[in-house]
Image (cartoon, rainbow, N blue to C red):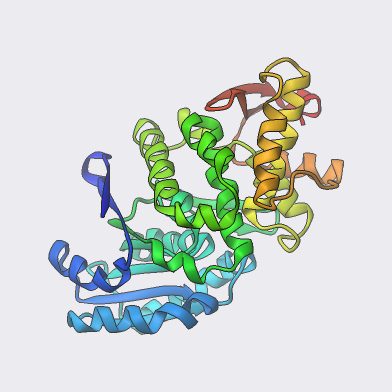
Length: 352
């Protein structure tokens, strides 16, 4: 088992990564915390595989367990769904001395974390991510949020979990498309801070080899995120580099009504588009775009799509990375070296 400490003072917690960790979660919570009731938030797809198992594991340790199951997908990550979960929490008499567990991918983690942060002004929660994307990114660092019609993650907070339990065996039931989705974010991670991880991806044959090496990938990505989050918990500086590919990526997701591309697919396109532009402007080392494109295409991730110029600019104008009249774009000097480039919003078309 690999343990990674996220050092944030009184908000510090551990990430634990291992095979078959799901079966040990009840014991771990009993050993390290003192809760009575546990409320699980999950989605229909994950529930069909793992909810009953997790409930049994928790009940074996005498926890009182209840749960709420949401429809899968980004369209569930909204204030209306949060309101339905609040009602269930009241019905189950959940208090500030109880625990919420988010069992699922990024949507479940973001929504469940947002609910935990806001119900009764804050309830402890633990992340049990079931997708590669959630295991390497969204479950770590305390960003919790819901979407509005106007854009993604526009309502949220920073609220750290009490622990993150990553069971690599859960990836075996993940549909191939969503494993690739996570690889998009993992490749992003390598582009901004880990040249060795990028080389690992370059030398892999296919998704099968990536799955075999998933623990190595997860550990490397978690270490990158650990360092960035510890240096900048509230996303005011260095942490913004984690948004490489996201400014255009989020606009693509919105352009296609969150139906055509997964998050990782949209980020893959976003990385390619911004890197190609920055190469042409002399900001990124020549050949970087082709390197990224080649690795993404190896794992059947998209590298281009048609986007509506006006809609894209409108979405970017509402992006949470904006500050007043400027916007922070994340670009590469070279593979493994991401940086923040602050530009005037009036000049955004030149760079997008």
